Image 1 (cartoon, one colour):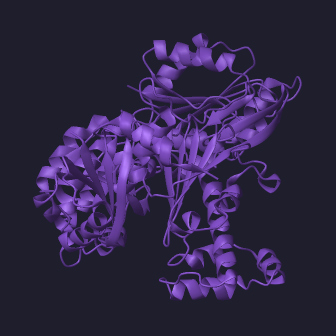
Image 2 (cartoon, chains in turn brown, purple):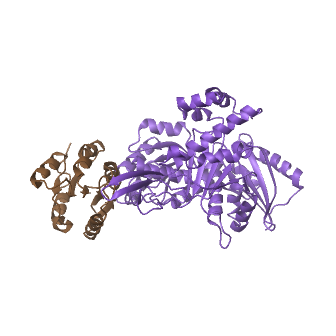
Image 3 (cartoon, rainbow over the protein chains, first blue to last red):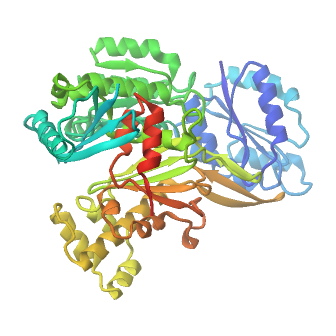
Amino acid sequence: MNTIVIGVIGADVHAVGNKIIEYTLTSQGYNVVNVGVLATQEDFINAAIESDAKMILVSSLYGHGEIDCRGLREKCIEAGLDKIILYVGGNIVVGKQDFKEVEQRFLAMGFNRVFPPMTKIESVLDIIKKDLEEYGKNTFD
Amino acid sequence: MEKILLIDFGSTYTKLTAVSLKNEEIIGTAASFTTVSSDIKEGYHNALAKLFAKTGELKFDKIIACSSAAGGLKMAAIGLVEELTVEAAKIVCLGAGAKVDIILSHHITNEDVENIIKKKIDIILLAGGTDGGNSECVLYNLRKLGEAHIKIPIIYAGNRSCRDEVLKIMKEYDLNGFICDNIMAKLNLLNIEDAKNVIKQIFLSNIIVGKGIKKIEEEIDGVILPTPQALLQGVDLLSKGYLDEEGLGELLVFDIGGATTDVYSLCPGEPKRGDTILKGIQEPYAKRTVEGDLGMRYSALGVLASLNEEKLDMYKLQGIDMEKECNLRHQFVEMIPQSKHEEVVDELMAKICVDTALSRHVGKIESYYTPMGIMYLQSGKDLSDIKYIIGTGGVIINSPQPKKILEAGLYNKNKMMELRPKEVKYLLDSNYILSAMGLLSTISPLCALRIMKKYLVEV
């Protein structure tokens, strides 16, 4: 069974979407480790090490995602998680910015996929499945 | 069954407590030096003679003991991530009444293994990985221990999914291995009972034999617990109550010794407000921590090290040279305060022990400004609703002002982030009965509870 770590990063307490993601991924047969709201980068990484996760799915709904997510890929590499797949989604930046640009910025930070606001978890299940199947083919360091 | 004798084989003293079950009272207590290096029976006989001198000859229906003699129970806690399975392993060891002399995370090295042998560790607790999670690290560590042909009992309490490989490695290297439930099967959820039981079993079947304590069982019914675990069971009972007999509710216990300061908290410790979120491991109702660097004599230098320049100067203005005093006590561990000044210094050191040990034990709170207002993150246990603080150990019991020492554990404006008790009553274990009552609770919980309620003195 593939393990996915999920959580809401930073000083962000939006718990509802987090629960929906947990419910949906669990019902798809994934082992979901939820670090909950107000999660730090270390919370995600520690959970991923102990649970041998293949993917970290970061949510950010309050606009400060860019600051909170900076350095996560580097820390993952430092912690030995050099193959881990990183997703981020939600309202990850302040205001209405061109998503293409936002996506580029987060890809440059080392995220594998960046999802625009209002993306439903159900709509990306196929992508998650495919990425997990290809897990390990790329390392990121 | 009427008369019971409860024994605590301590590192220095062998303490006896004779109890009448029928009258629910203590018939008498006595202590003599522990003689485990020659023959443990000698010290027991001496103490028994002292007891009978007070009470007259007694015939006991049952005699049981706990022990922390010959160095107590020394454990190594090994896990994967420091904040998770390493912390969990530490909590399990302490909860089982052990001293945690070695703490290791991630892959262990040859040097670590040598250290385990050199420090004469009694039991190794090997954890790592949630169920279905990481197995590479525990297997690597187990193999490392195997390659060193370690004969020390190893308890495997890690990822359940790789038990087959674990068994194979244990067999391959002929290790003295035991297997129990994963102490962290799910992230941040502790599962400590099974591991604690296995530690107890090994303590009783192996450790006390090796240390020459088992010999005493020719004369008594049995050594049944490590002393700290007996104490933990005693205060757990005192907190929760038994059947219709009410307990005292949420408790905090300080035991200051020459070498260590032990803190026990008995409470759920969960967040008390809707805007507070618990982070990290959910700690157990009965939590024990041991500070090996905080003590009145042997560890006096640790007390000194916990003070900054500012504090040292402040004490100097009050006429106390802490540097000199702590060094003196470290050098002369047998020292008993003779003058008023020495008494004041001991009291001050005890206060520092209480304050510093609690800072490490208690849960902390942090505030976060979120778009939805201020939210709080709690890590560890919230002790703010504690009703009683109990003091035990020589320096507190013999102090003319025990309350003053224990007050150092209260809420303090300089440590606002610590969830310390606010309004409490103070109790004193002036007859050293807590661990004895933990022992007695295995025979008659009701009687043990009532005796504790009767003999703990409010100060």
